Amino acid sequence: MPELTTILLAEDEPALGQIIKESLETRKFKVLLCDNGEKAYETYKAEQPKLLVLDVMMPKKDGFTLAKEIRVLDDTIPIIFLTAKSQTQDVVEGFTIGGNDYLKKPFSIEELIVRINNLLKRTKTQQKAELITLGAFTFDFPKQVLQFKDNQPQQLTHREAHLLFHLIKNKNQVLDRSLILNKLWGNDDFFSARSMDVFISKLRKKLSADTNIQIINVRGFGYKLVC
Image (cartoon, rainbow, N blue to C red; front, side, top):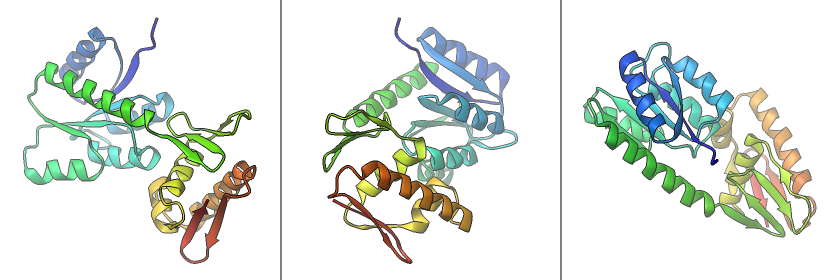
């Protein structure tokens, strides 16, 4: 029996949340329903869903704030916003902070399902393309696996994988230290910077099998992956 795709639904209107949940479950999705932003954030970290459907106006933490915090941890998970707001600047803000789609209330459940399926297909296609060759290594970003030739694959942590992905995207260029700290750690303070140094050291060790690969510290600016 195939594993169900898990969707996190954050909606504070009980009746609407239940209708959406039950409708998606009839389409063979597993739905985690939360009625506020704080609960949704904790559920996201615990369950690692494949897609997020977030109401914008929620108690404790609104959908935009929730999406910003999740984007620090994961810049690939699809996000659909649900909102009663209709002003253009709200739509623009939703896309600016990392939303992939936007549905204004009231909406058709069928339309929501179509948009969910389209985003999941697009994400699957993108993930297939994310098998990256780095020197003698193969890096499977979606699975967070690094493999040297035919050796045993190395499982990376979420943060190691994202840090390596950004280094590779900027290969042979300086990766701005402050930019990546804010993106992956949420700030660029002293303790986060020390933490990133530790992760860089771990990546250097994992990549040491190929002597043509180096991560260079460019003092005052950031890091450069040279290959």
